[in-house]
Every structure is written in structure tokens, then in C-alpha cells.
Length: 69
Image (cartoon, rainbow, N blue to C red):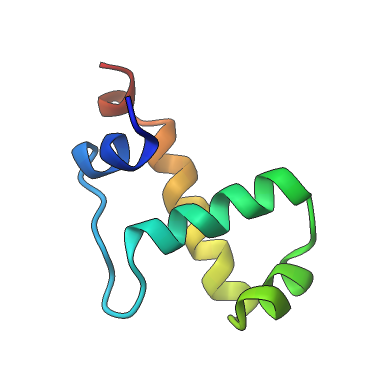
């Protein structure tokens, strides 16, 4: 199953200014590079608190039951 489709099925949607694809992109970028929030924030021009929120949101989406069924 496509990661994006799985997270949509789990009930995650776009926020006011950021699409689900962008949140997923931030999550994957952080997982692959292992960079700090500060460096990722510079890359995406976003505050560390916001990036942390996106990361946690996607992480919890992947660890929830609807993804595995």
C-alpha cells in the first residue's frame, strides 16, 4: 500500500497551510538524513516546534492500528 494512501485511510488530512504530502516529506527527510530539527528547519524554512509536530503526527499515524489492517 502507498504510504500516502495509508495515512489518509488512518484519518490524517491536510492542515490549514501544509498538505499531508509535505508533512510526509518532512518525516521521511528527517528519518533518512538524521539531521537535527534546527538543520531541517533551515532546509524547509519552518520552526523546530512545527517540524516536531509534523514528525510526531506522521509517526503516530504509522504506529496506529488502521495502517496495519
